[in-house]
Length: 141
Image (cartoon, rainbow, N blue to C red):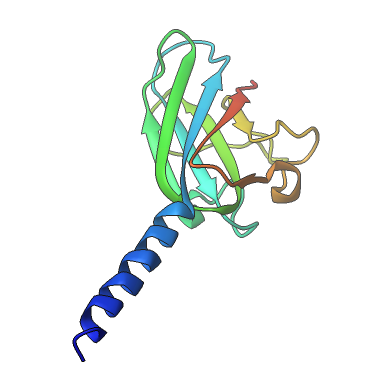
C-alpha cells in the first residue's frame, strides 16, 4: 500500500511528459504583402473539412499585424500530426476572404506548400513532428 501512491504519481508524471513531448509550436511566416494595411488572417486545419475557406472549421486561427510586407503567427501546443495552413490579406478588416464568381480569391492569399492550381488539403498538408517548426508562405494576389 505504501508504494501505490508513489507509483501512481510516477505513472501520471510519465504520461504528462509524453503528452507534452507530442506537441509542437508552429510558426507561420507570411511574405509578399503589397502593403501593411489591415491584418493577416491565418487558419490551421487538421483535415480537409472546410479547407481552405471555412475558417470556423480550423483548429487554430490568428489575426496578426503586417509589418514591412511580412507577418508572423505562432501557434503553440499543437498535437503532432498532419496540418495545412491557409492565410489571406484582410486589408478591409472584414474577416472574410471574398471570392469572385468562379471561386478565385479577391484578396491576397497563400497556402502551405504553395500548391499550384485549385487549393486542396492534400497538396497543402505537412507533418508537424518537431517541438518548433516553421512554415513559410508567400502571399499571392
